[in-house]
Image 1 (cartoon, rainbow, N blue to C red):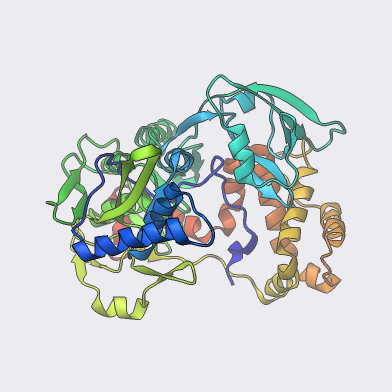
Image 2 (tube, helix red, strand yellow):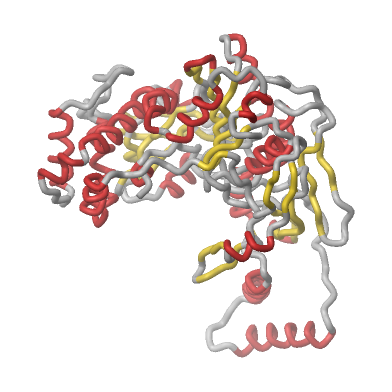
Length: 522
């Protein structure tokens, strides 16, 4: 069983960007349809509009028909957006700036909580702290609201005011603060760390409009601190701006090296290459990936792997390698449509084929894919199977739970949400009391047991005792993240992060990428 069952992932600002899409606004592409088919569609629309028992406005009939057409094609990523939906899509998927307060938020039962505060944002200047509960926005109580609804009320035009009421641990009375919305920048690289053996750790969390520049700055900054080798963490990074994926790849690739090929129907292939000299051309690099690594992240990992410029560790990536265009339509509608696929420099398809089953995307038969997979080669001649997604050079599974910990997880599983809330509440209660060397005490464990009991979670004493190290890990991660941010939590969790541990072990002593690749026989 994966030890990630209750681990706390880093938080993205208000929403998650999951695809990287080059925009192509223009005329709606028309296909060729038989005249009889077009006539049938027109007649059906007319009859429904005029004779259906439940009257439907003419505009709605056509919009529903358009949505039905989109749903009927074999493209699970195609969508028809209205004005609000396209604005949300642009902000969440492509945009890195918006009018807001600069907070990352999470759901905790019926309350939305501040999980991160961006540097230089109105939230930071207004004294907002991690762990603050959002109780009201202007005159509206937010208890019971989703994160999406809270986000919609916090985001607005730059320069407009908004009042937010917070609840804070250790403070009896709510805190109401007036903010002025400002342009908010969500950092692609929110922090860096210097690890042992002169290893610079860089979490690249999103592909915004400055991801390439931020990675370059991070590498230069770590080199100035003495870093001789680097780890780029792409785990959980669902992608974003494809142009930035090219720039991110270029940080370690030589000018002129291939990064990506884009193939579309009835169009000549488009080739993307590194256009500048690299920031770092020879230092050993390891890149960490998992099933949440997708799209632009896969472009980067694939290009580095094909050119033997980085050692890829972790789990096989998601496999989101589709080219998508967004086409403007009348009345502020827009159509998002898949038009092609992306390929790595060696010719591997980034996309892993999936089909919709009961409303979910399900991978095609993996055994069949492996049987049909072509063998590609890296620049150095290493064999790379064309399986879709990026297969790690060094597969590393998440740490597993022992039998006692599995017993504990099964016991709390029916009340998983309440258990997470209990962990959060105990961590939040440590506000202002902890240092970066925080360690869980028996008293803190007792407090957790009490909160679990209040939440209706019943666990036998011996079962709880058998999972002490696991429970302590969850409490430590959440407490440090809430008090000091992700960097403190990552530093403390490294001993139990098998992927990062393995990367650090392989990097140790390596002075060139060639030396690093030899550690795995590459």
